[in-house]
Length: 462
Image (cartoon, rainbow, N blue to C red; front, top):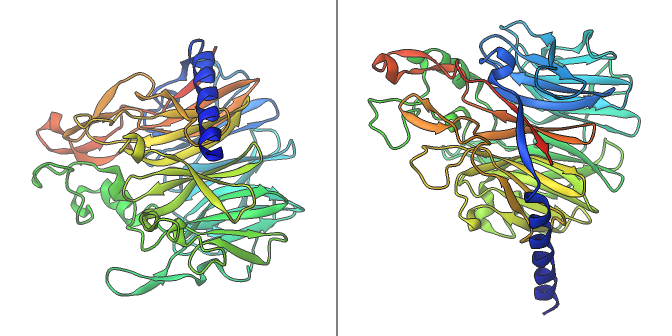
């Protein structure tokens, strides 16, 4: 009865808050068409540094870019970095280490690199070539913990790096190793489960690392640029195989297992709190709690809010969810999109606390003919309790759609990044990747799809 009363009170309060906020809130676009370069497909990261908001893009055609603004308003953005097209495809992570320096890292075909700036304009490469391992194509997260900056990397194996000064980086020889978990593929081979540290968080004086079991397949990305080399199984969704269509989910390798969560008080010695054989009975991706959660391939976002550590999942069955913990060991599910009828929120892309609420940005894509394929969504809750999350954006902001080869999909199909500047919340979108695919306008002849549609940034206004 106490639990039921608690949920009733939380839901009642959320109804009041929904009416209070939604009646006066709207979203205004401040950046469109990829800052004038439609090959900027994603706002892949955002960070605030010395009074300016920075945004890093994913651009596989021309190379990554970084833009900034002191106001966030339309027309105020300037480009402060441009990567060579044959090197970094995207700035997957922007991290401000206070006012000391801003770091940029991401997806680099020559091995992940880390850039550093102290003034926002002059960028210095402080690490390159995958930090000694060229298989490390990507660095997705960075955080300060104690005397060190930590960066989560990977591609074939999850690895953690750190630096005292931001210039000299070294591999952390963790005990035990993040790659120690082995799982059996469908082929029967035993493989490494944790291929990437996707998120890092500091909670109750401990450093947490959240793993992925699959990420971008570098060969698939290259193959999609060349139509003749498309990977097997990349035919259309629900169409004849002769009409091959772009499916963004085909760019992710199949995951052999489910995510894990590790924590450490010193950065060297680690304890597994969610994963295969963890001492708390959570299991991989919380599979001991619910066997269906074995499909939780990755932790795509984390946040600390109201005394809890939250995580958002990517789920192979599109059953993405949000979980939280007060102690790091006992976890509860507070949002399950599939149970709400939201069957195409494939993952929780970003979480961010802002002015007393927890905001959630999702990835929602599929043929527009299917119900609940809406494009980018933003949900919010003032308490973070189960049953209190409500939807602020359900149509990709503007309801527009585009053709991805032969199927119509939402133009803004995900909220990939959040940023805060001068008391305002900004949301950066993802749209179709600019890659080679059959073009219905050309009778099925190949062309670079997505080249005319770039990412956007929207601002929450009252």
